[in-house]
Image (cartoon, one colour):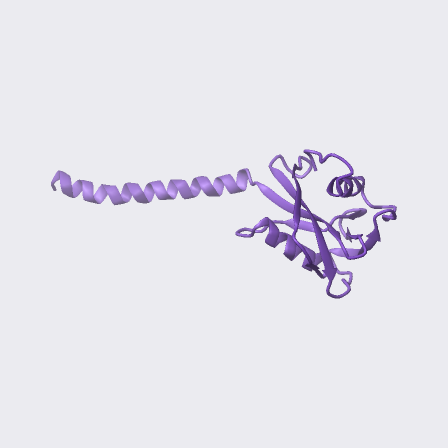
Length: 166
């Protein structure tokens, strides 16, 4: 076998091995150090009421939102989550309020907060995820609205300085 023949046989094997190693590194990175991104909305209707949800698995009313899925933009995720959690449609441009670090969830979690006008297509019925939801006047939030929810509403309305942490 000549040197050229040996090179032709080993180069594809090396390239295959390098591709396998890179794939392994990507999988390990996703499993061992996943980055997570979520979206939340201060969603106001035409009467300037804010839409809040009470989940079945955590206490208190909070802003609607959830995780950004693979190959999904934050805005697309926002549209999907508002539809899923409130039967809401976006009725105007979404305004980016902040990009927050959320150390309570994981050391690599971030939340994008938007201020957006919405309209409800139909009433949102309770299910396994959402126990209760509705629009509330800004000056009459439910007693069990979480402190973080109250703070983020104030930030979105420009009544306080946005925090760096969720």
